View (cartoon, rainbow, N blue to C red):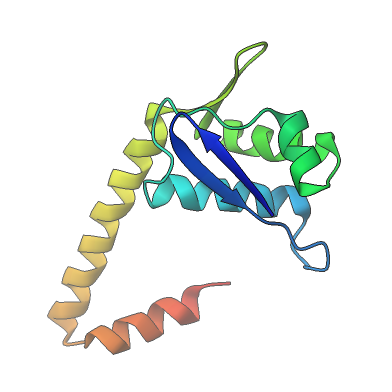
Length: 127
């Protein structure tokens, strides 16, 4: 587990070496989650790869792979010498997701589904 302060925000990251999910995907997923819930905002700097790798006891290339995934998704901008920063697109993606959720809730309401029934459907859809 690693706790990092990033532009006045705190990031809590953990990896489980025994998980069937790769370490880079675990790191990227946790960053995605923190962007989605607003804990990380556009402009926030992620910890340097070397520091994060040391804190999580993983290879630095694993962290770089996670950062590259996030870059490819448009959530993070990587600049040599300046580090990794959360992009404005990350916040736009969150807004788009909220709009999609509202549409799903509206559709479920029209179909007469209860909140619990909708949540059951969502749980079934998760991998």
